[in-house]
Amino acid sequence: MSNIQKTLIVFKPDTMQRGLVGEILTRFERVGLKIVATKMLAPDKAHFHKHYEEIGKMITRRGEPIFNITLEMMLQGPVVAMVLEGVEAVALVRKMVGPTEPKSAAPGTIRGDFSHMSYGYADTEGKGIPNLIHASGDEDEAAQEIKHWFSDNEIFDYQVVNEKFTR
Image (cartoon, rainbow, N blue to C red; front, side, top):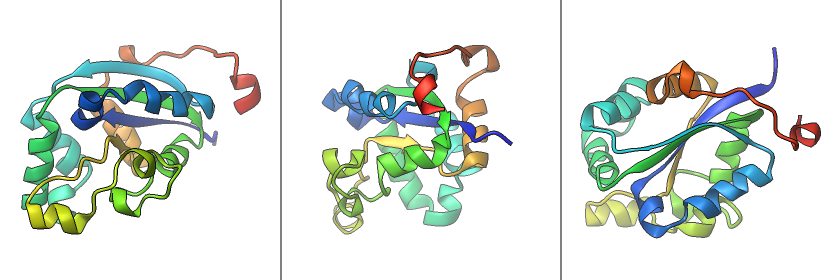
């Protein structure tokens, strides 16, 4: 079995509105991950329901109120979805992004450097956590999410120079 994996990332509306897509994307490219699919879109509620509940089990794990707050945040503007490919890409991207709660994210991670809100504050205020980016949780979730967000003909296979050093 190859350790070359594909994983989904979604730049959330807060990233788009803050103009951080390029800066964050640069981190993934610098570590040697390859962009094999990308698009900007404004998914509807049904698309996010499939993503967050049918695949991610958010309602099951965290409850409907958290899902509804997340849905409200995700509908605030367009997102950019990408498939990244590389050696053990799923775990690498998760490590780079940091924990879901920005307050718990270490400096040097994407969430640690660009966001800071805690679950406690968000719960008290009845708001979602602007944590910038979605990253697939494991290989199975990545495979399901990629199929949900991209058709096969939207995913490209090509070589980049840095593969000589990153594979």
